[in-house]
Length: 468
Figure 1: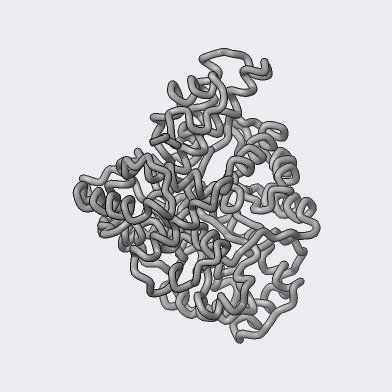
Figure 2 (figure 1 turned 90 degrees about the horizontal axis):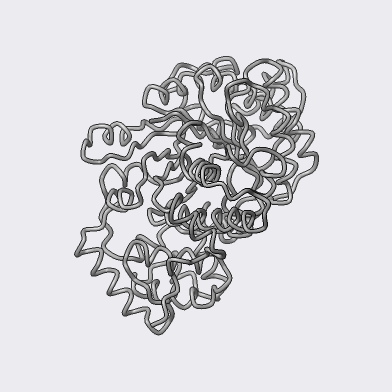
């Protein structure tokens, strides 16, 4: 049997092998952004079969299966776990050159000691082999996290979540990974949508009556305080685009009142409210010494028929473009910085053609003593957590800023197997740096190289977030 995932997998030069084995391989993981379910972590869910663990909720794999022509019955439908696994094995065989081919075989090797290449012919054998492994070693959520050497997990939580599972995790002394909430107020930006009015009603029940925008901002601040008391120190915002639109207070009051009444608002009003809310949130985050993350650039639920049948997050999203990004982003950060409350910030652009726009913008707002790269260019995510996407982001970051201070990879996944992507990232990082050393573009200085690799793999995140 030819082994695909070898010790040299993705390590494409001699120096890369050395850097990976000396400095990267055994570094812990600081998972500062993911979509793991805190309930499953707290309850230490056991997985009876590989299909539930591997395919449940994984829209990356679902997209590939649809491209293979697999019927939805075998993807999100009622087919048996074995049937679904067979269809995934068939799909994977046809996914060569797609990152899924690498990720999936990394996961099989790292977590289940399976080193065969999965295909349609051996699907049943590997299905039974992995399921036997799951039972024999009692593989659970917490065992996968521990095996992956994860020190910190920051989940993604709605402002109105009660965080009770985070509380329960704090009492589990035998589970050493720190699991903390992150504040994700996406729904608070959705003025003109029915979900916004419903959110205000729930928020009001948890805080105080909300009849105007001042009440709203104060209620948001109360929930930030609640998260802070639970150990939360990060916020995240999933925005379709970065908007900047000047406003006055009467504009915002009018927009808010319309939104309470479930009335539609104009695109200009939507942009004004986004600008206003990010500005107000930045004050709160800065006061609390939180990190503000902004993921932007997704256009979601593009297949109407599929959305009506399957709902959101089912694999029908794509990369968005937008006009005036550079002007909007610079104006937004400048508004916060000029008022003295630009918090530590990480920007993630889904559209990779904006890497240099984001990188050059970030460099305009680093002028705060004693904080190294206060504003960060976040790792390639979603459609960019690929070899090409990671290299594009790191190359742009090195061109426009200081790669030495990059906070590194994030998981951004709902799958407990996805920590293999940190290993994938580290192999790509070591090849990238190793190649520069062999080209003579970085000195062959062991002290410098150890610092660079360990900083990006773990140390920068540890020092930037200060969660443990």
